Amino acid sequence: MFGSRSNIGWQVASVAAVKRETGDVKTFMLEPEGGPMSFVAGQHIDVRLTAPDGYQAQRSYSIASAPERPGCIDITIELLEDGEVSPYFHYVVEPGDQIEFRGPIGGPFTWRARKGTRLLLIGGGSGVVPLMSMLRHRVASEKAVEVPAVLLYSSRTDHHIIYRGELADMDAADEDLKVIHTLTRHQPPGWTGRRRRVDLEMVRDALGVLGDLGDADGGEVLCYICGPSDFVENSAMFAVELGIAAENVMTERFGPTGT
Image (cartoon, rainbow, N blue to C red; front, side):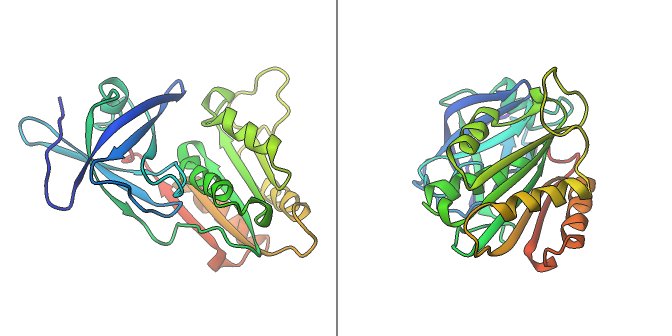
């Protein structure tokens, strides 16, 4: 079993709460023992576990919470049964436990809410996590009415939609935000969302929705894409092909090591 061990450059956080998001995804609220931690939406932290024999395993997890709530940071972790770190979180970690971490980390894939921009977010699976931090920041910073936003979110099935209830509430409460879901493997009876992988036409439609939000003055489109490597590469290609400036397309990808 892993435990925590303090080292220079690393901090300790206490687990304040654990929330199940889906059958294989949980959110862990961490309270850094060193006090509030400032960060920017889109950044991540490294988590390190140390076994009694000294063996260590380290993984990076995006921060899901808004920077406006610095006293606690949320990380949302998908269970991968053959992983070293995610099973420990899912099967062992409980409120009150201590976790070793360092951060925040990351610069290019970050967003600070500012007027005069439009936000296109494209997420695949657990790639929605840093995008959720951006959406929460958009609301908490009181810039929601100034920054129209669209989230295009691809999930395997409706049971795999992370933050489903909160996203629905955000969409319903905010006329300048639209959440577009697509399911790639199975759609339940009555499903009214999209039914395929993200493609050029789907990104075109999302941009069309974004263009209809907010006032008539429009604004520069910033696009953030996060998910598996192929998903990110294809979505970024679609975004540029549809006219978004390449320098305005920020990407973050994860692979099989993100366990």
